[in-house]
Image (cartoon, rainbow, N blue to C red; front, side):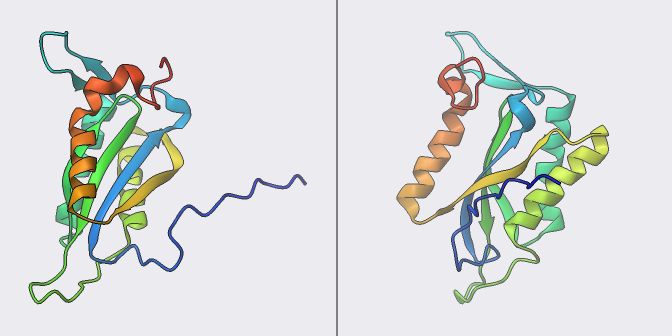
Length: 163
């Protein structure tokens, strides 16, 4: 029997991912296949992603997150041809006390991916996803602008297999 490769733990040690705060999440398609859509737009207009059927299903699943997890909202997202960027916000109560989300963000993203996979009949997703804890307002603004401008940067995007 051959040994399976050991995966490096990419989560921040000691951090509870159900904690109130903001998280930048990137979810990728296996082998960088461009299944979610294509970037369109000429130099005279702002590039955007024309979603495929799988992309539209993913969009619907993202828009259900807050309905399923009332303490979690999607502040900003973009669906690219082979990956997704999201800012997830886990709420706290008015008094400033932390409200634990019903589940950590790993479960939220896992369920979003599972929902899409069930709907389309196969799993297009890479096994894991990337996340970053957004630490302050400047970091939030940087991530928000990155997500907003991502379609216009597709030609040079690290996830673009043609770049």
